[in-house]
Structure formats: C-alpha cells, structure tokens
Image 1 (cartoon, rainbow, N blue to C red):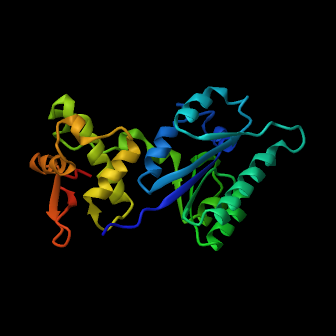
Image 2: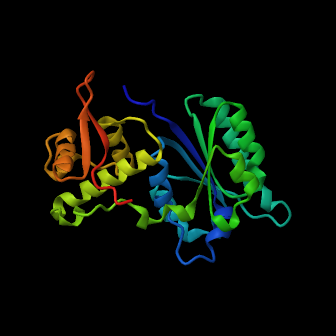
Image 3: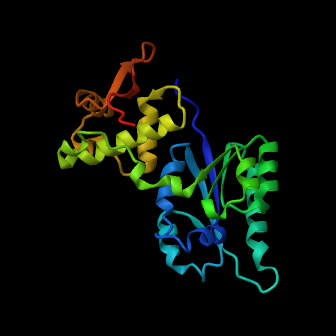
Length: 253
C-alpha cells in the first residue's frame, strides 16, 4: 500500500564540516540535519569521524543523537586523509555487507569523496551529500544523486500556517510536528501521503510521540481534527479504508 521505506546510513566527515561552520554565526546543530534525513527514510547507521580532542564541545550533542564517534588522532604527516580513508573503507564495507541499506549519506563537502560516491552508485546505492556552502566542492555536489546545503535547513523554514498559534498549548506541539512532517514528505515528492507513513515519520522525528499524549484516541482522530481546523485535506483510500492526506488547505507558501 505505502511506498517502500528507504534505509539510510549516515557518514559524517566532521573535520570538513568544522571548516565550514567555524566562522559562522551559530554552532552546528546535528538535530537539524537528522530531522531532514528522517523524512527520507529510516536512519540505521550514524557514524562521525574526527580527532575529537579538537571538537570536544560537540561530543555530548552527537552522543545524545546516538551517533558513533570514531576517533582519528591528528598526525603530523598523514593526518589529513586518515579520517577520509577510514570513512571510505567503512562505507564500502557496509555497502557490500548490508544489502538492505539503499541510501548512503555523506556529510562533507570534500571532493576527495567523489570516487566513493561513484562506487556506491555503481553498486546500486542512492547517495545524498550534505555540507556547508562555503566548504563544498562542486565536484562532489554534482556527483551525488541529491545534495543538501546545511544552510537550507534553517528552523525558520518550518511550516507555521495561520491558526496554529491559536491551538491550545497542550495540543499545539502535535499539530506543529504533524504539519512540519507533511511538508517534509511533500518536499520528498511522495506521491501518496498515507496516514501510516506520516505517523512513522513523526515518530522518527520525535520517538516519544504518541497521539494519546495529546488527547486523541487514534492517529486518525488527530488527522480529522487537523482537517476540521482547516489545515489539511483528507480523503479515504477506497481499497484500504485508511486516510490519505491530499495536501494543505492554507499553504501560504
């Protein structure tokens, strides 16, 4: 009934990222990255490579996001490429060992990863790149199936239709998550927005989410309330009898 769920492996070249955001106005936010990626499917593997003695302030945030931190000590002569080589070896090992992983995310802007991207695509994998605008090589971004610039993940881009602020506080969080998730799935060009797909994505964004915590007996009740309040349009699939979200009533976009 629903689209097959993609499975993702995320490999982070943290030192390359650091070059891009060290002069920025705000610190790097891994949550912003993962919230976009879970719209694309289930993230199974999350690994980051760096000399973590140099980036100690980010370790707790990455640990809390369940990212495995691989220590690559800086060496005077070969330090630059040791993390790159380890990332490539691990990615290719996973490519051959885990056939169920269909999408690889390379978080870096380094052109040195272009051969890795080509080899993953050669093995039938979809490759998504993610990096900072100021430190991303066009050679890498053009070789990926999709490339996301970190700067495009601004929190301000989240959906906030008129009327959301009028919802009682105890329910507002659920509506904000629902509408943001629907917008993300639409951005991913999902042809049919099944209610089960929407709920699964919401739970990937917020694992503790349950509609009952917001006073709804079922997820369908939450969707019906969103339609009643004039945010979304629903239809019932004639075969399964389940809800499908047709789109927004008020896009404002």
